[in-house]
Length: 302
Length: 308
Ligand SMILES: Nc1nc2c(ncn2[C@@H]2O[C@H](COP(=O)(O)OP(=O)(O)OP(=O)(O)O)[C@@H](O)[C@H]2O)c(=O)[nH]1
Ligand SMILES: Nc1nc2c(ncn2[C@@H]2O[C@H](COP(=O)(O)OP(=O)(O)OP(=O)(O)O)[C@@H](O)[C@H]2O)c(=O)[nH]1
Ligand SMILES: [Mg+2]
Ligand SMILES: [Mg+2]
Image (cartoon, rainbow over all chains, first blue to last red):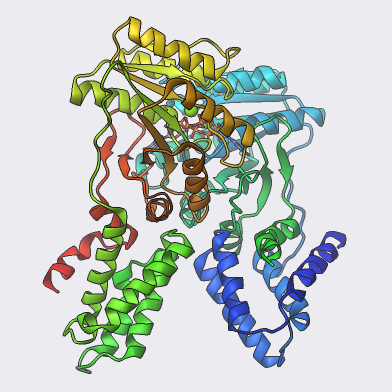
């Protein structure tokens, strides 16, 4: 509730800069949202709705628009069921499995390192499985993260079957009584049918070996990505029943607004954001702060 | 949810006009609105779209479209011409130094594809141009970045120069150049760590490497799935390094790739190559004309235009 109030008051400040609700105002609002990579259709619908609302309530002054606009935006993200808690749903006292998927270079392996660190800090016994057997140096990269975080890494030779590596990882995690096994996978573009099938197979192995697993399937999205992220979310969700998103590289200037459309159309929540390359740079997602971030530029522009 | 191509988008307007015999300014307005949305959905930067739309409107309101019997096709043709013109001609040439090895530096955001593309370029130089490149591991930050390049070197059976993770990237580049001269390499390809364009310290490091080895080419490697931010990234890298060209990666995906237009518009530097897969032979010359069709989502309507 509190974060919501700060959010509204920030939007209020913002709107106070524009006195009149006119075409210029809407045009700039549209541009700001588009430049944050918010889905094009989402933006157009939102602007239409806002225009209608302005007419209906006979709003002339931006100060009267305060609530309308902030509510509409958060509504796009949450839909009707605002505020269920969107943290990881892991098992207590038995092995939980997290499968991490996504296109090439988005930050899967790095996010796994950060997440391992975080879970370990929480007192959990964590293990990693080096399921990217394809990309040059991928196994070594995960091993470095294993060393950094003090977490065991299960691996096979590069070129082995990823499903076999994950199978091994599960066996090993069970025998060592780990709490969480995080499985890395090779980056793959969503239009590569055979690679998506390979991923589905990995997931089936996990389902077969551990009841109710995988407990989380995290899709990693790069905030720098534009409209294509929607296609990524859709196709990865079809192949692996994605349960949450990790939105990386938000420490840059990209805003990652497309997750609004993803949440709206596919009901996949963002669970974490990546804010750098260090071990501590993974944070929980705050929808209000995020939505406000989409506007920050408008505020600076003056 | 599927992205509609421009042709699809224009269908309803075209239907309305058909049989009317005359195109009104209102019709043109409707069509340019659809063009705008199609470009935005393809991730072309909104500022670039604005300029494009202005040009397109001018041409469309003129005789070219208004008096055409097939105004829809005519609009598509005008749009495609504008995009192709903006992206420039085909330019996949790589510089050759007058004396000594030619130095190529790879730069870009994290995960764009620099290391992989370094390997691909080395492969291309050897296969197509009969050259003998040296790969240089200047990424001392990302975990196992050096091993990654070394693995690529092994796969290609090519020399990789590295000094471990403790060395300074500027020293590595400098020593690599010496080594290349000694061992008679004619190309040096420097792989650098991914960095944010707003990271002053790391951008400064690239400037130092540049000053030290005086590269003949500085390629900005950009992920073709990049959204609106492409403009900031490209502008910033270009301002700070005066890049000589751009390489677009991951074009084997289903992205429209509007970032290509944005980058060209703000840097005016040629897009030289396109990465078409993860394998080391999957690098192609960049074709502006094909890219324009792709951005408009109309690979298969080319024939439609030809008839127009
Ligand atoms: N600035 C920044 N960089 C990040 C972030 N997350 C990851 N990176 C960097 O992005 C690059 C790619 O990260 P990886 O973890 O290797 O990505 P990946 O998805 O595993 O890549 P592939 O396995 O090749 O598909 C690395 O240079 C990371 O350091 C982030 O939140 N912010
Ligand atoms: N499908 C496809 N994948 C590519 C292409 N180019 C690179 N990749 C993949 O993208 C991911 C990142 O590539 P890298 O070469 O590690 O990227 P980088 O820019 O060196 O990354 P950092 O050093 O972490 O900044 C890897 O999984 C590559 O295999 C391409 O053209 N197509
Ligand atoms: Mg990885
Ligand atoms: Mg690299």
